[in-house]
Image (cartoon, rainbow, N blue to C red; front, top):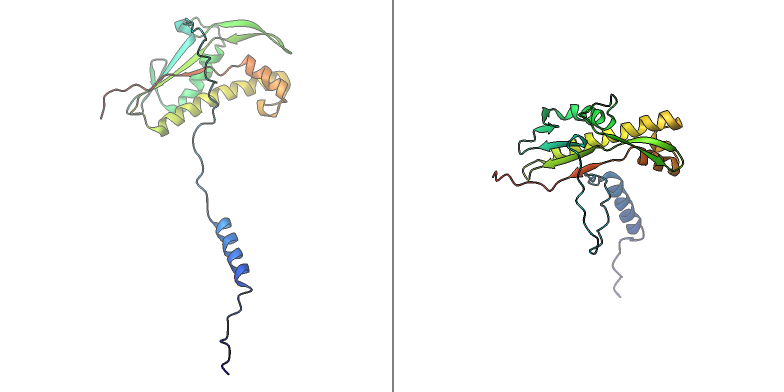
Length: 191
């Protein structure tokens, strides 16, 4: 009578496979997402009338990035590191300069009357603009708005914007709107 062949014990094989799986899950890194956290506006109603809104020239600051990633803000060439301060000065217009945006007194529910800037930042880039340069400019513009919101929140509520409750955050957003407009990229014909 033949003896049955010896078999390897396989009871611990599932445990080893599980430990190897856990090891690779802990050690491996996932690609981090890059980009902008923006919510796109809802699609307009197809039956909606489109009215051309005329904005005074003094209320618009054009920020251009060309194919070589050079920045022009308000017609002045500058480095990206200076853009935040330029945008803050434009949006705040602390000295009521006639070349900077107008302010309009509006009543904010739960706060009262407040002079709101009519300033709009128009971001324009070309198809040759690098994504990295585009992101840097976007980040500086958003930082400018966030710093203005934090200053307003500290002065009126004693906390920065993100630490406020939802009602007060709405008040800050109403007082300091983020008016950044993006035009479609232009094709400069560069290859």
